[in-house]
Structure formats: structure tokens, C-alpha cells
Image (cartoon, rainbow, N blue to C red; front, top):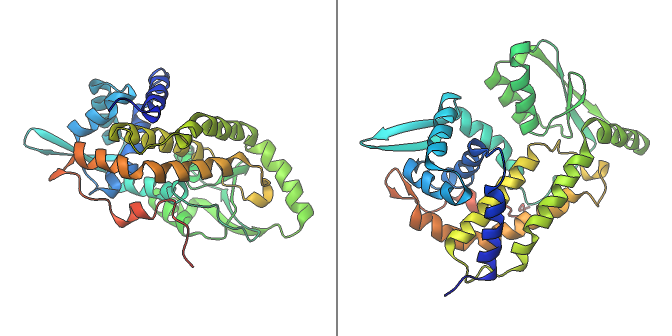
Length: 309
């Protein structure tokens, strides 16, 4: 059977991806480890990773260099067994990815009760301030004003885990706040738009929808498993990178026309559509520590699934 419309559209997206400069191979590897390896035994053979990344324009040498750097930065562990090397998230890398995974694969945006968690960076050492700001951003905190970070939720569990890992429990002050009045919310919306550059993020979401909408419209039924896998990886990688810039502002402060909602609807639909074919590629072509990658864990089936209860 020849190429389907889906196959051709995926190849077009791959060509565009390969032309991008700089080629951020480390970020793509983190996406692939999180989206694939984390729910298929956790470990992937380096040779499989090299082969899987080749269609994206990541040459073998760049893959090896990127894996080495991720290992040096504490994101991944490399294990040798005979002449083969195996890649998996380190404890630190898995924690960092898991913090964002709950946002990446959420079927809907959480309802908001008007509560905020505020973090005042009082005594964060300058040498660690960049890592601190980046880690907060990964879990949805935005910098409301210099040194003051906010998240539209009263749930502090993820924050406490992060501060414990960074050993910054005594360097910040954590507070709660509310904006119960509609007028206060409107004033806060204006501040959010200005401080967090939401128009730029909105443009990114619109471009995401425009880029991947054609894959939702094309049938994946007779497409090559490799095309389904590439579509899944390209889409979840692009979506993950947008979420890392998103302060997770509630719809009540954004409005129903926020393009992030359209992006969520599209990625949910596309991810489910390519699932069976992409799994055929993953199980048939990629190897882990004990041969072919095992079947997907329950966490995979929960992705983009509506909450029960």
C-alpha cells in the first residue's frame, strides 16, 4: 500500500522540523523518554533511541552528545551491559518530568476556586536563582512581580516536593491569597497579560493548532506505524514546550476564547487517534533492557482520559 494522506502530512511536518535551528536534541530526547520510555519499562536501548530520532533530523553523533550532556546534568542515567548502553531517567529527571506530566496529559483544565499560592523568593542564592525560576515555571508558577511567584491553586504538595529537592525550604516564604471579587479578578487579568506575555503564548497555541489540525482531519487507519509515532512525538513535543511557558492561568482570568483550550482539545484527539498505530511502532521497533519494550503501563491509558467521579 502506498503513502496515505496522513503519511504525507507527517513527512511534511518532519521536513519542517528538520529545518529548525538550533536543533534542540536534548529537549526532544526528554520528550521521548517521558512520552515513551516512562510507560514502557522506563529503559530504552541507546541504539533504538538513535534510530527513533533519525527521522527528526537528529544524527547519531548529536544523539550521543546530547545523551552525554543530559547524563552530565543529572537528567538521565546511562547503564552499560556488554557493548550496549541503555538510557533512562535519573531519579532527578523522572521527578522533573513527572511534575509537568500531570499538566501535559490532563484532559481538561482544573476548575478554580479563587485561591492562589504565592512564593516570595526571600533568600534564594543568586547562583541558584535561574534553576529555581525554571523549576517553578515547570509546575505552573508565574512571576507576578520581581521575586513574587503565583500559582492559581491552594494545593502545595508539588511545591513542597520541589523545594525539598532544591533544598530551598528556608529560602522562600509560601503564602495563600484570594481574589474573590470580580473587579479584583479583572484588575489581576490586566496585570497577568502584561507581566506574563500571554499574547506571545496565545500566538504559540494558535500556531500549534494550525500546524497539527491537518493530522486530525486525515485518517490514520492505514498510515504507517512510523508515521503515527512521528506524529505523536512531534505533537506532544510541541505541546510540552508550550506548557513550559504557560503559567497555568485559570479560564476565569483568560476567557473562553483562550487558544490554549483549542490546543488541548486538538492534542487530546490526535493523541488518542494515533495511539494504536504508534504503539505498534514502539513495541515492534524499540528495545529496552530485556528485548522489545514491554506493553504500556496503566499510566499511558490514563493520558487525556476524563477524570472519574
